[in-house]
Length: 142
Ligand code: FES
Image (cartoon, rainbow, N blue to C red; front, side, top):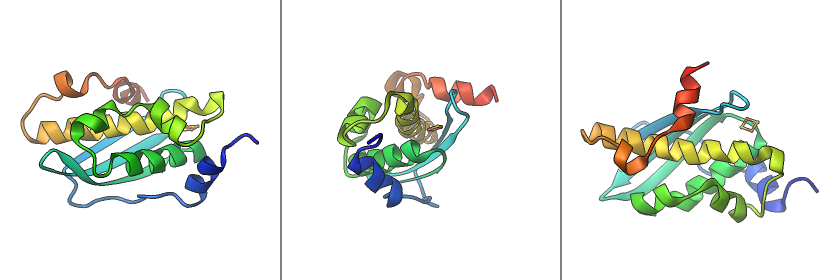
């Protein structure tokens, strides 16, 4: 079996799909490898992510990883959300085929981009906190 049961489950019934019209941070990233796009919406209160939703023009693996990633960051602090790596999301899904690992990076980068937007809206330079966003740069090349 190419995909784990958890991946198939999150792909067929993804959690947190949609947008948040009153989001505190919105991030959009493009995947340099396949050209797919992910948009992430976060609601943040007192340093805690209270809600997260995503929309994607991406493949099944991107949908499953974003579904899992949004589940994992909901209720967590910004610090913990920034530490969430695509490997941790892939592990939580019981793995992905090697050719699909790049799809999971989209979710991680979209969370970071949304947090960067959140800091920008507060007038804070996000770069020292969030770090560089290579996928965002790749997006502008298309
Ligand atoms: Fe583009 Fe998976 S093939 S995100």
